[in-house]
Image 1 (tube, each protein chain N blue to C red):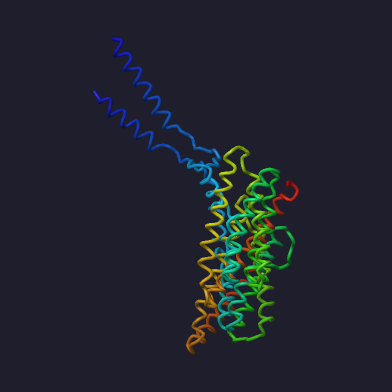
Image 2: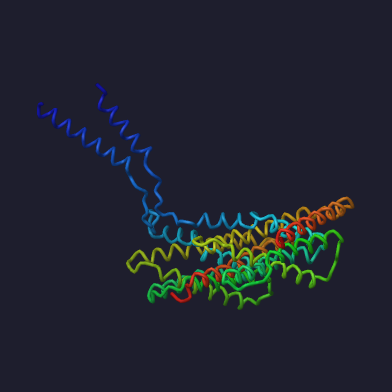
Length: 198
Length: 210
């Protein structure tokens, strides 16, 4: 005969190990909102290419563009995201995104040095397209603020990544490498433009 | 079967039934609002887990920290005090306006921090007072009207004080240009999040459901 205490022990262990997870006091969707927001900008290579290119170009241009671009870009991109969220249409968004990679790639490749205002205006125009695409793609049922924070932070970190690579600009070989990176961004932009048009 | 054996059998059956009920337990879906360690800690937890309240305080800390220690000292006094007064007003009137208040607070604090405008002391203090009162009002409007409400509010205000003090303490010693730019970038992220939250709010149709 099985000892009674052993039966009780197994019943207790079974009850303790088969219990479902208690979801009490968990704000559903909060963490998922931030993580999915963080993931969104890096889920499309066209966005990644352009965001990193902004950092590369900022590093190539030097101060004050190197710090003006990462401050301005998220704000203007949020304006584009806002327009996308409230369903204000912008024509040819995908073409605009591809064109941003082409233009930024060409600027890095040919080491273009426009005035700071012109560079800011160009990057802001691109930011509207990128933000609008993100705004229209935002999934429903997530935590709006946490999603937005993750999405903006990921974009900023991609700029920082580009700026970090762009530090090589101080050396001769680094300037050549940056031009090579610009050529790669340019080629990537052409590919995405072909995809958008086709 | 003897009486003792029958009682033992019934007892074993009950234990088995208890064990079986343990196997079939469902997920708990209750939306608890308490931490289980008292209303003061509930207030602390509410503030820390609510980005709509937490982020504007960080934005204000960046703004005050970039402007200097005098700004930090005044905001440290004004922000929690006005948060408490706003909380009391919100608890009395009970009209919830959480999202618009959060949007305006995020845009104002993040925007000013990103712009790094040379605001005079009175302007920083005024911004802190308005932000503290508005966010405190939003928090107060969800407080229970029994005796625990005041203690929850005290927990929130304490958390605001500590969060602001710790953040501004980290920002004030920053002297290098890169560190100050990094703080401004954080401010721009807060403002951008506020603008996107505004879009979410409009898309969800909330403006018509206040």
